[in-house]
Length: 289
Image (cartoon, rainbow, N blue to C red; front, side, top):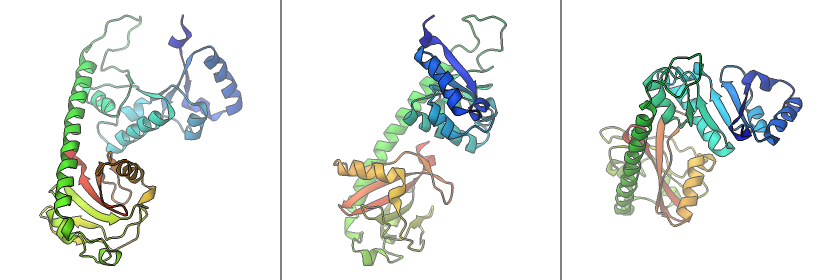
């Protein structure tokens, strides 16, 4: 058998042993061309640094997590974070114990590569090629492709609409640092932004916040938080946005992320007002769902 078709599984608990001995064993399987999977991830108390050290090809998310992704947002967020971890570390996710179509839909949305569970077929004593719900996964993948295209169109429309709106409002947007520090400095701008915008503020190209955060109510009432001189450079979306703006893009729309303060899901639009002034506008995530 081609060793590339063999996947050696280790449980999360086994990662807690002697890492040097374990690594030597794994190296033998890797040298033979086998793949490595970590089983039951999330069931025990395995350490992330062990995963980074071993560098698996597949991580199998335990059913104790999978069976909560459709009822508790935090478990879905963990799966989505693991998928992002896999993108930069070079492993795929396999979701175990998928029992319902909605669980499968959520696991697909969390960007899993492989899925197993009773949603496809009950356990059988012998291996065969047939299973129930054969078309379920294909239908969900087609639905995901459609939804992704809709979201892409929405993202493009948002960037165009916000870009045009902000350019039209340039005359009322203060640029001087002293004027920006005033609590009402962005009130007129905030009232004119589209209904799906929930916050805005201005910072410099180094990520130093120059204006208060202007909160926009559903009826466009404006309230401003105290000026805090927050450092946005440490936020991943800000770094990517600055890179995009430096490449000639006038605006940049971040991926979905959760705010630390309010645990709110948002996306942020960044617009270059001048080389050292960036307008950031937070958008409600429900508008993109």
